[in-house]
Image (cartoon, rainbow, N blue to C red; front, top):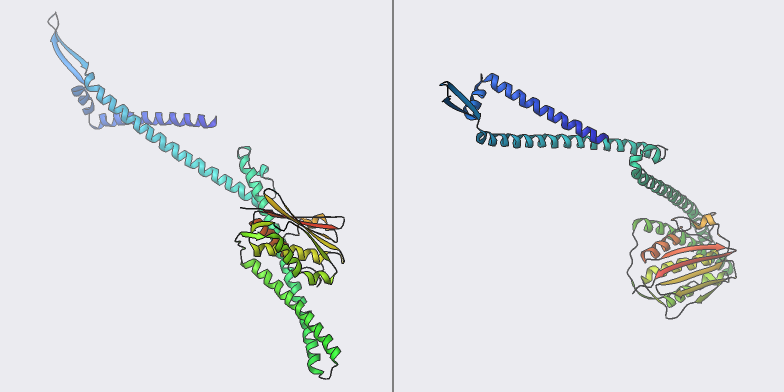
Length: 379
């Protein structure tokens, strides 16, 4: 309603201004040229006829020459209309630009106040901008969540690096110490020498594992995972990964039960899928109770292939189940030597599954932990 009243007032002002301008022009022309304008009108727009009436009196008859006046009036009307439209359009354009500028400034100020403050968007923006308020509220929530995740990820990463840097000293000191004993005691009994050599080798393996964790962190930050799909013999891949992990499984007297069709295949990157299943199998072996069975079940539907890794171990709290796929997150809060790596295995596995169009989820209850990976069959 306010906009309509404003437009009517603007139009009235334009008409008033036009009338005033025409009057001023007429006055100036007639006054400056000392009646020449009137003389011109009488000479060009009036027809004068002289004759005598019945009484013999001289009569002057003056009539408007409409055939001359019509083109002039039409031209004046056309020119006036064009001028009025031009002025009206210019004024409307300027007014719209000013209104747009004020609107942008107002939204900018409200946006700054909302992003920097703690008030809700509906409190900062008026009802006319309710849609903007809803969208900004969603954007702010997403930004805050990303900031929170990034902060937690950075903290976990820095803590992990600090732990690894500190823990590197322990195996390195042991390696140097035992090698020094072997070097200094030339007459050391063979049995004791073999014992010290075995301990030194174990510490060196541990040192190598920790250095590889540093490399995992660096590679994850510097490279983007890319996949090249091809038909993959899923059954053979799972058998191969199980065989490779036998030394670790035998150490804790764990066994693996594989249930899958021998002809089961999937369209994917064999190296990347091997990393996914390898990470899940190692994770199951690391957190299984000694002497228990790790179950692998692969099933096929019309459109997807589902692989489940199930092990018996400590129940994972629900709040931690939501975080185990985040980068640098480790269930092993004590960061003992026996379990846990750089906290990248599950995060990388989830990213690889997503690149294949699939997903990974985890469930844990009553001492049973299940990781489920779903992959599309592909063509």
